Length: 284
Length: 283
Image 1 (cartoon, rainbow over the protein chains, first blue to last red):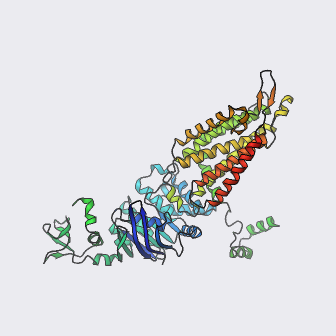
Image 2: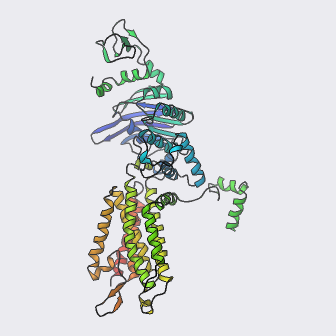
Image 3: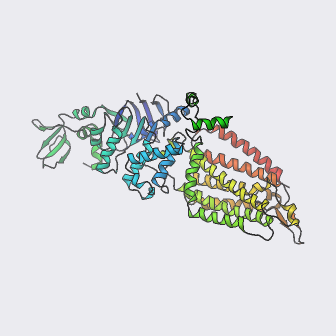
């Protein structure tokens, strides 16, 4: 296992972000789904050695992030994209990636230059190499962050909402990038359930600092069988309902007898799992 | 022999000795530049900073400083270099603070690299040392590259005393670095300047304690026309400045996460050394 998290707790003041969360992650892409404040970012930051857990054990690539020497070794083999890419505004794109490359111990200038060119090409930022970071759009900044995460082809990629702000073409490119090396372990958090369905071998649904589901996207979707149906109007058993493009009302909840059940998607299953919590943001 | 071996290695990278070195965990020469990360980072930053308009202006002033003919030759040259260094501290602190202030929110992406946040701070210290060396070179050119009137010969600083110029520069820059780390905003630049000026003002006002100011004149001009060297030891004053620079470097590194014990030990040593040197510098 590339990543083992056992009974991890983390609080910020009175707010409990992780409440005894346990998780094992092997090779391939694992997606974290969960509503805002579920603890996804806290978990990723602990795995990426940014934060230390209050209690519980964490092993990353077989090493203990609590140990100073192990932490350095983990960082050598880790690529991390934080939720907020704090790139230096006064730098050009190339300068910033070069700076991070030096910090990642790419000290030989020629090899470093080649590596910087490679990752800029990977994220399609070669044409913006000399553009100031302050001039980049949100999506471009995200790609810049991805470029730094891919430096040195790390064994473990920890990506916090990597697809935010990417246009459809870039999202496809991102999927290709992340999935092209099956031996690499990728842990990513996202709100894009279609990314999870398309990319992830495993999906973990987190809510209130606990794991609600762990399995394949197909299993997640299957877990909602019999809970999703279609009808002309919203019915009493529906926890969530919306009018689809064909004019019918797609509903999630407890279907009435004889309801027109439909094959659930990953998104449907996620909404069934998270339940009332998912409804709060839209005020239904 | 070592040089010959390295040259031979470079010429024939396919030889067995290279593989032998690699097998024993050493970096064969020529495969990569064994530059420490802070030095490599300083290089990246220096390339950026060298093209800034402020840096180009400073370069122009430096050039004028070295090439200007002054009436009292080396004597005026040294004095002007000292005076200029004082202004240079301000410019450097402003550039440094401005650059660091723009790097807020970058801690997370830098913090998860193997070298963490300490490497960029170390690289700034390396840059300051380079600026200090440059400044010392300029002062040395002024001191020994020009002649001074004979009556001033006794007043001229020796090589160690001349180190006040770069030490002042490095110390001022370190003060700016600490301020920028603690207050990562533009306000850190004026804060640094106010702190520096206050420090000079407080100690310079008291002749007995003048040697504890970060910058001191070499010469006292008397009303009867006598010109004498300031009382106190310039050599120990420089040791005092060196101690302060060490303390500044430790304080700047303490603003980063990581092991603290070696820094605390170094800080204690620098602290004791600074106090001793300060006392010995007084008249």
